[in-house]
Image (cartoon, rainbow, N blue to C red; front, side):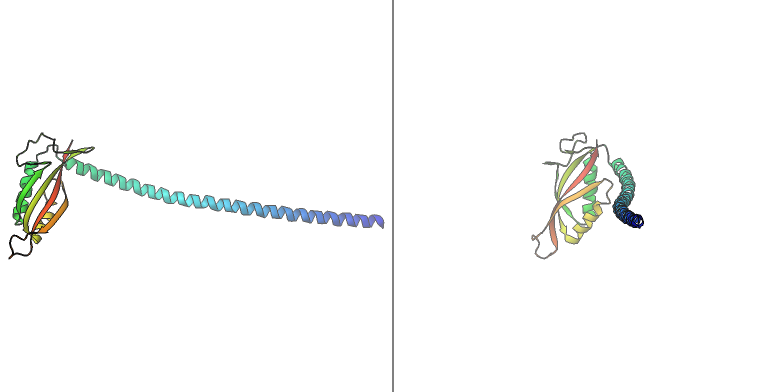
Length: 191
């Protein structure tokens, strides 16, 4: 009987130890599974973020190619000679068409009408081109000036208009919408 009892104790102890080992194994297994699940979740998030970034990179690549082709088209339309006199003639004709009077024009830093097309001393040197600034002062009706600025985009020569300053021209008290305007026009010359 003693041996049967000790055998039962031994078996019960073994079963308890086996159950404890199983509980520990299951606990460690769950801990491992949860830890691995977290790692898998992090990896899946990284994969999704990488796919989004890859899609954005593809979009940026397409946009870059489009912008590069537009740059090439614009750069190809920039003349290789300064020849601001023809641009100035076009601008003067546009001003006249819009009922404006050009009161002064300054090419670069000096008041000029006739210029040497090979002289780049008045230009601003950029990476792939030169900029030639021309400052104008005009007078006329405000609406005519607004139409004139819009028409400048239609000129044959690529240009940028900036630094527009418009003030009331009080020289004629009968006309209330008469203005004096100064602005800079930049024309481009390819190197």
